[in-house]
Image (tube, rainbow, N blue to C red):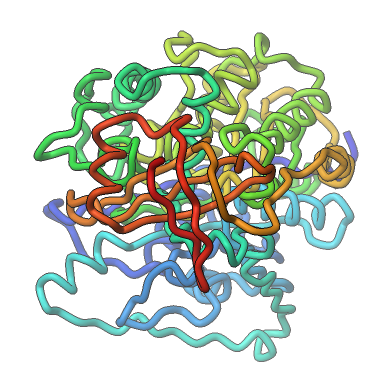
Length: 513
């Protein structure tokens, strides 16, 4: 084993519930600090690791990603703010791009630096404090979370990788109301339902059956964002007063829970540094295979309900590890909504929702908590603990970002393995070679709906978005806010129905034919 081989030697998680007796209203940086302290302690040698840590990296919070506004200020450079709190002086500090795939991207970056001999050890972390933000705003309270750190003052290289939104949504998609993740995923979900030929009621139960086991895992996880009660498929999938519709086909209990106070952290070291620090080898977990891939923009996808990038990344990671799905002891699939789990686990790997190994080790984003871009660092941390408890076994983590836009796959084990890197270029080349969907040059005339979603505001339907094919050829997108059109869509399944599309100055409108 090369001395520079990176290994995961410590993991940590932290949760702060607003109804807890010791609730303190911690900031994003304070939550990350708590998780990092736990990760350092998890190495078995604690502070002895700190002198080796020369690289730190942070996952962007929702606030840093532009997804929300926090009036309390924030750490200007989160990686440096947390490092300062820990007494670590890094040579390089990294702020990763947006997306649920970002924990793997950061792990691959830091691991690569260790493998090349640039740094002996690295610390990565991320957090969300959305629950506290909303709690304080509701109470009319304020605080100051502003922190400023100067990388030049400590001689650190500062790397901000940018947002990474390129190619995620087209101007046409945005103009027709595809902005929130729930809207985009609802369109993907209904497209998949159309391909399978299932009714709305039958597909709703399939979504409930998929996620019911997740609730059982979340109920037993001490790091879940709230107390979770296990639910059956009907309870999850049936709309009601406490399960209002968000966007067809999703009621609230099928949607990622973003109101959380959660943080996670991972310590990476070279084999040589781990030995020098005295980290016991039973703490070491190796990366055996990894891949990252980007999907096309929604309107360019031949099958809006599919996810070729996820399937390609998973196949690549498993091939690098030399493993099949049958040889994996534990899985965690990113589960902001059902469709990415269906695509990766059910359609892609042929797994079953009731697979005895489970499809999550945390409980999933709607129940454990959707800790922003950082969710899958919680999955990695939990997986590391699971693998240490069963030496020689293998675990799989699937990471999803954007609107089924970016996918990461990782295979982990306590079995020693040289650093495999993270494959991307060869996987992406194959994906990019596939043809795009043909868009109609002019969205006008008779067409048929291939997918749709009705969006709701506080339980009241407010608009419908449809994507389909024109009889004259080419894909179209259109929308309507007319009450009669929305009522007709709710009364009868819109999939496959004929519509008349009319081009507008800013967006296309439609009526049922």
